[in-house]
Length: 353
Image (tube, rainbow, N blue to C red; front, side):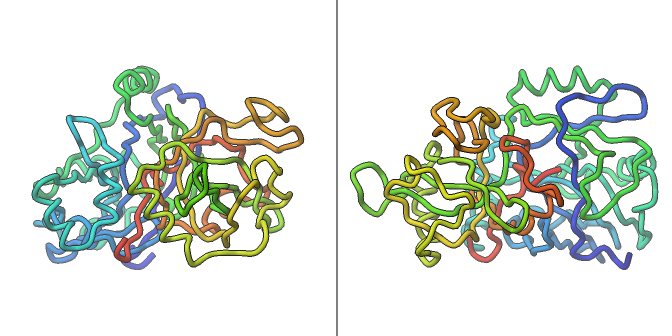
């Protein structure tokens, strides 16, 4: 498959039960940004899930390629604050200018958690079983001063409980005989998130109570069959001053005259709405979906809605069509399905497993 340059990483399928047995191995689901590292002649190029160049955003990872030639690593960039991943600090880095990224690399360096090797010495390893790829990765070790190997565990249930107690994102379970399938969401990799996160599309927003220019709540949806956008709720919690300013700037040039959702947004949600072209993707965390009409404050007659959603951050590395592809031909997954909380980042000056 060529040299794996710009490769889209393999993705995991959401699950609610940890698989048991010695055919599986388990890892921590880090709350970071999925990054593929391509090392050639000691130099490294970092790319996001959709192939965008992220190298300038993480200058402290420049030595990931030290001593390596024609190697492609799959992993996640994590901002470890007090020993735990800090997603909000990582968002600051993602949106930093190159100059600010250089300063943050010195004051708050990130860590690259490597969990797979896809190419080694110019040899494509996609058809090699995970068990063998892991042995090769461990033989390489953690390249660079800011890299670690993400540990593996045989007892998935215990890891699930431990990560929940420690406030971590969740776990990923992988079949030891699985091949690496670039860009595919495979049932051979399963992800179980403790705090479900999903990517949604912004179709409008409502000003803060009392009017004004500030964004008070986002009106969001998920791609549905036939190319439509299904409304799944309002998101107001989690909008910090910095997040609000960033969102307002991004939505300011996307104004639209009509509600882009189908069916139309219920009147109680649409009151005072400013509609936008559905081009911006954001991440939200919620307690799951609401299926019963009128449940938990949802308007009667509404479809499934996110339950108590909280804004997490922009997903500028994703487009609405990416969510449509993830949903598959049958339409969108139920609101509240775990998403990919590690794949944020506008990589032009602005997940996952």
